[in-house]
Length: 133
Image (cartoon, rainbow, N blue to C red; front, top):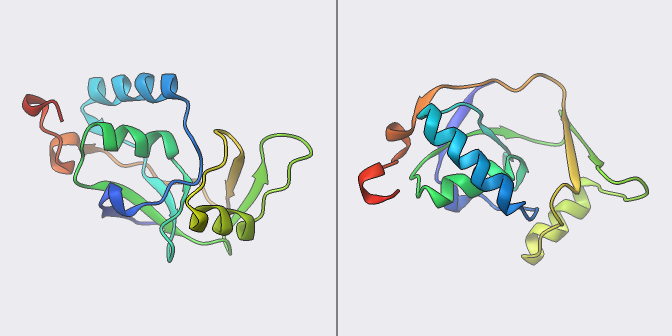
């Protein structure tokens, strides 16, 4: 499975994020000085399947590029985190196209294969620590 470098602003989040988790993740990424986990996005629509918090960090750091896996629902199953809630690809598409977002931790994407890791220096993604970005 191959990742591609995409512009963060071209990706559409489908869930809200936990701000505290975003800050913790940002700190960990800055300490590592590398981006290690690509974001999973729908190959045609560029809706975020997995990685909403990482996308929020990328935007906070003003990264120009972000590693992303281009997937679809033929190889990815979606479930709800909360019992009794129903989530389907069609519901996700409708929500994303409407501009609204699910609450954090609503959708759980289950991948057929383990997602690959990467090790990309933040500077290669456009991070400039001297400018605060």
